[in-house]
Image 1 (cartoon, rainbow, N blue to C red):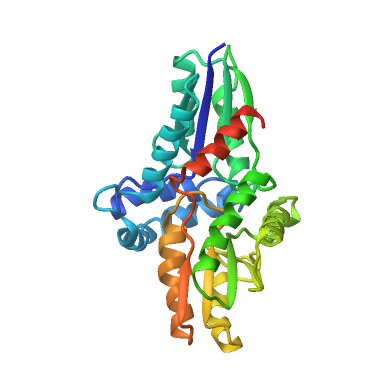
Image 2: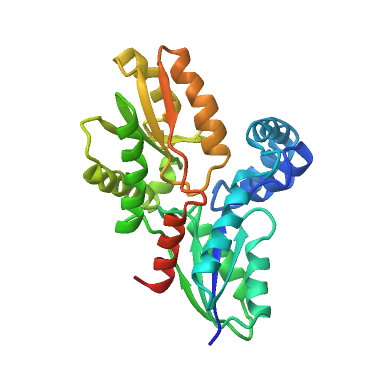
Amino acid sequence: MKKGVLLINLGTPAAPTATAVRPFLHRFLGDPRVINTPRAIWLPILNLMILPKRPAASAAKYKQIWSKDHGSPLDYYTKRQTAQLQALLPDYRVDYAYSYSHPLISEGLQKMADAGVSQLTIIPLYPQYSTTTIGSVMDDINRFYYRRAHIPELHLISGFADRADYLDLLAGKIQQELDQDDYDQVVMSYHGIPVSYVQNGDPYPQQCQATTAGVKARLKTKVPVIQTYQSKFGPAQWLTPATDATMKALPGKGVKRVLVVSPAFVADCLETLQELDVENRAYFLDNGGQHFKLVPCFNDDPAFTKVLAQIVSGK
């Protein structure tokens, strides 16, 4: 039996240009799991109002985080995670794929099929389950295998927010920063989702709350820890409190030194490096804050790769 592992992340434009961003946004915002507005209403808005303008604005943000040597941070670290996991699991074929850019999930699954993989573990790199992320991944998997003559033994990891080793590693990253400097507040900022999705059964906020509670139980500090949500898109009501509003308000409450961590991401990307470390840093400092520090994501930390290896082995 030939075994394989497929790591899956959101994806990234191939370049920080409007031309490259447009197809990425088209796939992303065209996903019914991400935007569940009826297609007859949403697709004209997407194609006629959003895609003609938003790619240029998004490309300008990507330029702020693009590496001269490595390009997209998310792509670079996903490849590094894949290579490190392959080294830890020499008896497996380890590869990666993206939901909204190449190599797409269908392409990753085809490579596994071509290699004769008969037992496949799929790890979406999202610690907390949401219909917008892991649910979407499952849709792509189902579409790929629909009516195929052969389907391998599949093991889909639907989140790992409650794993002790993940929580130990995350809390350790935060503790290291707390031990090195003084802070008034720790802000755990998760990617948000619309409230309507939660009302329809998405367990995402409960999983975020469990992660926060697990981290707080492990930290040795008297510094208060709060939970917020970022990346709001569109007019609908999203989970609150919002990270941007929180950052603007904290200095007025006497919080001058803040440590920020984004547990929903395992690799630095636009939402961490630009939205948090540029935009929200400015909100905090412009409103009277004095020190803003973002804890890096796991990225290519070998300790995180070991967590992935443990997930594959079922431990």
